[in-house]
Image (cartoon, rainbow, N blue to C red; front, side, top):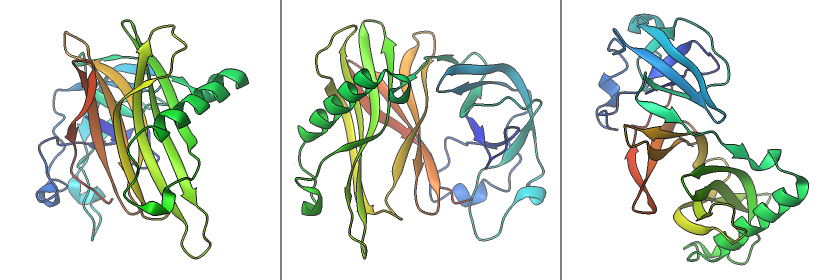
Length: 250
């Protein structure tokens, strides 16, 4: 897997999937394992580019002191609008529709439905947020076979000047395709804390892996001073966290 490095579209971080939090310190100094590989690049709109070649950068030219990161590589082109890449022909794109692109009435209906779905989940352990209204920070929909799926980041905020706090609720919901029924929550993950330090999840792409086109959601997990990547896969009608990368802070 590769992702753009900082704001560059052609310098990429090469994710080493077997690295853990305790071993990632040894990864940054290695040559990026991209020899002989080409990559397909994806974004929320689907596939952005195909068969893009990559070459490793010298670790000594890019390493930063006092932080841990991934080995870097440079792509042969500069495609725009991509968020994640995989070795060619390993993944199929599943395009997304954003709540922001919907008609205002449909957007409001979806936001209200997601807020109601969030309210049905077990209460947070932190009583500070109980009774506060939910707000949809982001939401994306897509279709797999006969099912419509929504992925949303729903938040609640405590606006205390001395100690502002936020709760993020990552939701994955499903309903029959074309139905106006409420979404049934198939996966959720809740985090809460100060606005500056609480982790937040960003949807990078939705893909189908392998010959069976197994649906998977690729997310970026942001912390106050670092990040990691994660994958949620669908199996037997449920979405499960199946992989997360090591934590890096540069």
